[in-house]
Length: 272
Ligand code: KIV
Image (cartoon, rainbow, N blue to C red; front, side, top):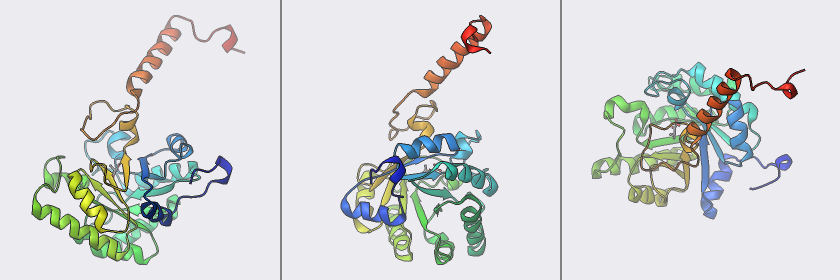
């Protein structure tokens, strides 16, 4: 998989299933714009998710609900223009697939046609089965998303760990098996107990991608702004920050402001 910049082998839905078979963990990160997607792709992340978390980190909304299909397509097309290697998966936003399977298919087709993305992701299990089937029948690869599903935040009322109780854990397992059976290529498991992630991952042949689901998932996903420390008020236990970019950027920007105010910038060498 790790190949030189010019001979990249593209990551496909099949590569992900092969990675699971071979015991190679899958790396997935979000990106929403060209410049970030270029860095993420060059760093050889396997899957780039144009998540509806763009609603939070790009647009500043409290939830993922307000982002529209047009806005998701805008983000996805910017990402696609940057990517040479990763598989690009795009979230179907809230309101673009829940009412009926035909609407779900229309939304998925718009994403694929207008952005050039490689696959879509939908939140939910049994309740969206017909929509997922309709999209799959059109030849569009689908990634599932179970556990904490942020588009249903007002139903749950909280972002706390899901499926701790046996009946919810059983439903999640059934939903995972159903999504595998109808043809999804992978499933995100968000914020569920590690033991349940292990059980699900061992029970299905398609890869699970965890976020707050522990180490037994077949891959991991994080929101890029969280990993880089650009967000600093969000501190869940599952998050590992690799940088404190908020502070580094604040410091750089403050120094620029000072340099402008003190006439230090631009210098003689920085003018024509
Ligand atoms: O929108 C998103 O970023 C996601 C991930 C958190 C899995 O769905």
